[in-house]
Image (cartoon, rainbow, N blue to C red):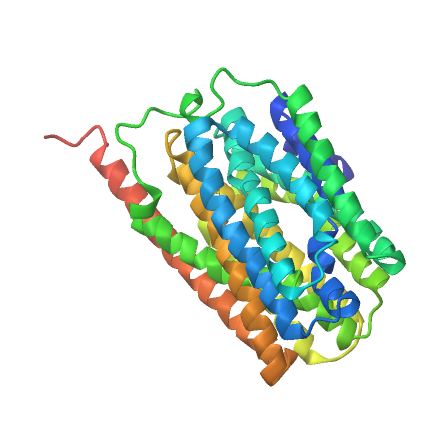
Length: 418
């Protein structure tokens, strides 16, 4: 049993190209300093004494900047290549993070947060394009899982340290987060080889495509994006309303909240790669159905909080939420890349990232309003409804994909005559 598990872990990491590992290293450096986002609502309410509604509006502005940034990042990646977009996004956003601590006024805070996220989130479609460029279809889902592993290993380190630093001085969060962005940009520029053309149009591992399909005219993919938005509205509660719930209702300390965020990251670090490899090896044809099951688990994790006020529920909820995340997100990115072609990959990945940005705008605004008017229990029921609707849409998409694949196989079968 132990030998089989060790072989599973070994095979899960085998065969990934060196640039994919280097991109993972860049993400590890960057995310090791990710401390501002998980503690932003606490910083705004506890340190700057904003109301819950004002904090929710700032988080909505955060999402608006992410929406514009991911759109521009995808466009620029297709036009100029992923390499310069990654480098400049990391470098400039790092300086804006440092500056963010000096914003005190509500409107100034909103303006600086918008510009920071606009610059910082241009990085998302660029790095996704880079992972797709340096990988091949056979290991692409695992390449994205490795990238997520690096993100979450950094997240677990940064989340735990962030709770400690927040207990000393919230301003330390901005300095550490900003400096690690700048360091990540320097490492990327120094060690990642610049492709002859860094845009996705030169990827040699994908089959040639006769025509270029616009992501914005791909009806099935647009429905997929809608389902992703519903899922992400639930998912983003983990970084918006959940820390506030743990603090105000379960009376957890910042350090304890940080440990729960660390648990989320460590689970992904130690489990996700092997889980994705095992699931994909046996159930690759059920990829979109698995996404739906992951969305359902995320919803259930929030609904569980309505069963009592015991602090142990926080641990169980984060545990179930993390399993749902691991089953959904790697396969979402893989499906997005498979739906695209090298000429429009940045566009598809930008639209996928924009789904999370829309959720970043929507989730804190509606979450804070529901909490203000009806309380946390109502919020968790509503979030469960969003995740259930998302799961149903993913399962419907799976049926449509299977129908299309079956029709294509019939049309291309050797026995068919003109």
